[in-house]
Amino acid sequence: MYATVMDQYGSSDVLRLAEFPDPEQRPGWVEVDLAASALNWHDVLVRQGVYKSPLPHVPGADGCGRRRDSDEKVMIVPSLFWGDRPAAPGPKWEILGDYRPGTYAERVSVPEKCLVPPPHGWSIAESAALPLVGLTTYRALFSRGRLRSGESLLVLGASGGIATMAIRLADAVGARVVVTSDDPEKIASAIDLGAAEGTSHTGDGWIANARAMTTGRQGFDVVLDPVGRWSESIACLRPGGRCVVLGSSASPTATLETRPFYFGQYELIGTTMGSLADMRGLMALIDRSMVDPPVIDRVFPLAEAGEAHRYLESGQAFGKVVLDHR
Image 1 (spheres, helix red, strand yellow):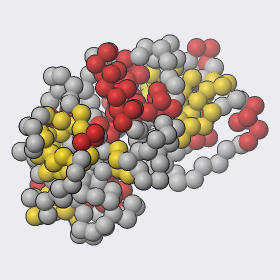
Image 2 (cartoon, rainbow, N blue to C red):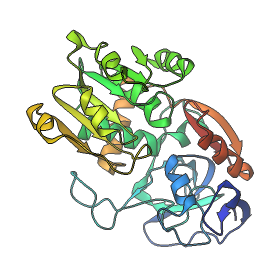
Image 3 (cartoon, rainbow, N blue to C red):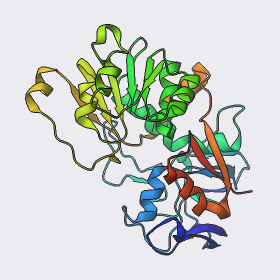
């Protein structure tokens, strides 16, 4: 089969379209002919060698296509071997595309339980873009962050896949969403999606500006931090609020003042991509509340995966970047 292959770690230039061995057949696994896959920042880290993927390697976690055994249209759930505890994954957990060939390919093999039908009426590209970002965001907001109707949510960022999906899902349950961005056009686009307001996240006054968008300036019930700005995120919370952390692109380390943290009764909650149970919760919410599909910014041919990575890393995208395999 043909796939986007990396023979070494590095820049987007290491990605090339080439022949790659067909998936290994094994009991309980199903091969899927892929029509589309979606990019995630996780794929960039794989390409850079952060996860020490075996080489040569096919990256990619998200995908949509048809089962080879039944021709059913399915989405790939990239959370493999989660384990038995809902609170956290077990030691065998991995993300598809980390240590076994991923979805930037004509075909992929996954455990049968990691296949789900896409929401009714969604396109191939929209379905391919949902699983990783949808599952990650659902777990962050609801399984871990316990966001409820009537609460306020601050999302650091306004344009990435996590931010745009967070707006969709939080709005669906009746939460009030505020976003941050340095780009007024991206804030405006986020408001069009369902956010109530937005503010810049630079300068000494941005935290006060954000808190001013809450009742009595008390702060937010939940802050979703996909970049690792812990101290600023916690400063945006109301007393007893929850900060949910799922990334570290702004900084790999964080420093907190201890006394204000415990006197504020804050919660600092770590999370990552979720379980199959979280996926079932996400699909039920989409069906129950008729959640709109992920925002698709651009679609590239599979052969141009390197260019798609360059575009993703440029920060220009609003929403998801997708590869078309057809």
